Image (cartoon, rainbow over all chains, first blue to last red; front, side, top):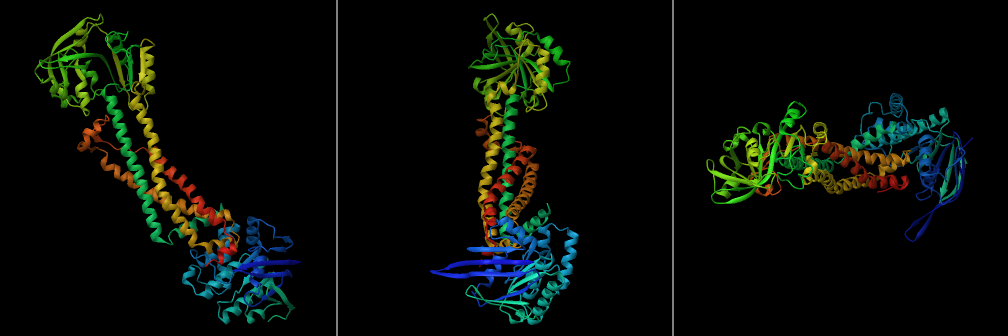
Length: 230
Length: 410
């Protein structure tokens, strides 16, 4: 089954007097259970493609399908519902809600989904343990290190077992040991729950975990290879 | 409903992210609420006192007259029911706080120096206690002792004008029903003081039976006055009086007899609303500014929540809940403070320093603040409703953010 299908996506940004082609006729298909890394130099279009797949940014042209449903023509509310139910996000910066504790941040998506309090608390504590943050449940983001915050963000992205996880430079602020732990967690979820991962990264260590490596340059896909993951 | 918990939690914690700003805004709301409720209580007290004083001057809560009396308040227009019959009916009823029958006619009072036009009130002092504005115990000399009393009690100001005093004689002159001069000499037995000096000049009290004799009206009276428990609701007394009079005279509520006082009450209701809205408008600038700043500082978070799947309507809800929470805390504290401020003033505030100016408006120089539950509710509801409306603009703006633009905002 196809998890993500993009057809001929184009997106141009205006920067000063210059038009920047962030996506230049990009087409890509990712199967359910795929573990794909998008790599590109800065401005290569990987984050734009990730945002378009997540319904956060609309392409100028082209079509996007998530689990068979076309999303590029959905309303704001419909896109929000799609992101809530089907997609987990890990952003480049830490992006936690500062007034909530680690556990409350992890619970946030489940709470919006309407999961019962006892169930979401149980799951939040479990996932925090899984990402190595046991005992830090009640800490606010300002009381955690960058790495800890990123792991909370990862925990939030995967706690409700979304079919698709989109991660933009998820290890950018982590040390190598934590990065490896995080990637192994992603792979475990991928292997055991058939969760699809699309990860935009510069990090060669992260790329080594990917089953499929897509290289982009100037908004185009220049290489798309299957590889033996680490 | 499951969203309310998270919206409330976010709103509450976001409120205290910037303690100083929230406390300043809270202080403004508390002061505004206090001013709304406290000043309304003072104004209500002032108007109620004005109405109560006005009613205590003579009207009572319900009055009975000859149908033509209001156009021509002369001795020719007496009630067609005898004083004895009226006394029998009203005296046997427990439905009234107080009642009295009176002779009330225009007259001329003459001392050896001056003459003045006055309103002569022939009263039974036992019936009048509780109905009249005159404090019997504060009268210089004495008040009338019975309906047969042959003395008169006049106002201190009138005594000064007539150059007379207790113990001296004056002459009262009016007309009898045959349009013949009816006059009589009286000894001044007492001088009364009134909150409003005009009353001291206008009214002269004489015994009812003595006045009836002087005017040759037998057992008839000009008016019957009834007093109930609360001037705001006189329907029970009115209906009972109508039943007793049975169409043989005109029965009127005080509000129909004194349109000025009645209008004061309704104008006051409108004024309270305008006062509350004006104060809120001043507050709303601060409130909207606080919310705009709060939204501006949290653009990335709002973008994150939208990206994670929170619908824009809940972003709107979060800002509004935050605003209402701030208002609710401010309202609660402001209301309690206003209540606390009114308590020590319940026995009256002496405003005699500006008393003369107030008398022009028919007000007493002692002010009794009146804190009505309906005014407290009105102030709270108006602030919450208008606060909700004022919050819509910044909340709407927050809900319109594009998630990716908001997240990447520096």
